[in-house]
Amino acid sequence: MLTTHTRDLLSPSEMRFLPTKRSISPEDESRTLLYKDASLSVRQIVRVIELENNVQHGTLPFLDRDIHNLFVKVRKKLAASDMKDLLDYLKFEQKASSKFYYAFTTFISMMGKTPKTTITDQDPWLTDAIVTEMSITKHIFCIWHITSKFSGWFCTILHSDYQYWCANFFKLYSLTLSKEFEPEWPLLVEKYDLINHKHI
Image (cartoon, rainbow, N blue to C red; front, side, top):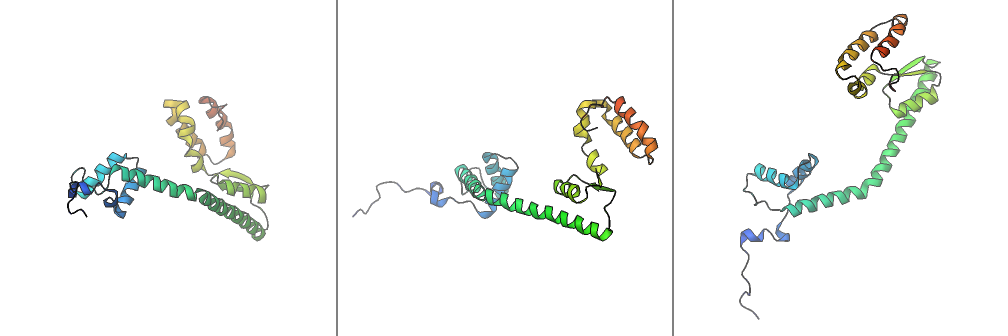
């Protein structure tokens, strides 16, 4: 039986590099995942946690490798539940869609007729239910929903004229009579050369 060690024992500072001695606390784990979602690199994450814990560089109870392993573990966990999450989402959406159908059927039976016009926000399930249950109803979109997309639709085309387009559009929008609006709309479209634009 050996009574002496054949190798030098590890110092306490070296012991922390052993896999059994390394661990990421639940607090550091949640912060690490938060920082990953904020697109920080592993080195940046380590540095931020060192600063937050007020410890010297390189003295955390875990290494960069442990953070990589944490990311792999989380990714595997998420991948295992991807299909279930997708099925749950689709079941939820199917229920939401059927609720719209029920709501419109109930509305029509209570009112005795379908409305002439309905205003929505382009929800696909809602649109589908309106087309099916209220086929003779005119379906239009909320003005705020349309104007919120203006910059994406027109800014690159109109450049410096974009703000003038918006001002002229809202001036026309404020008109209350169709006989005032109808002749002005084509002139506005022509003025900004938007006749062939797909959103006009």
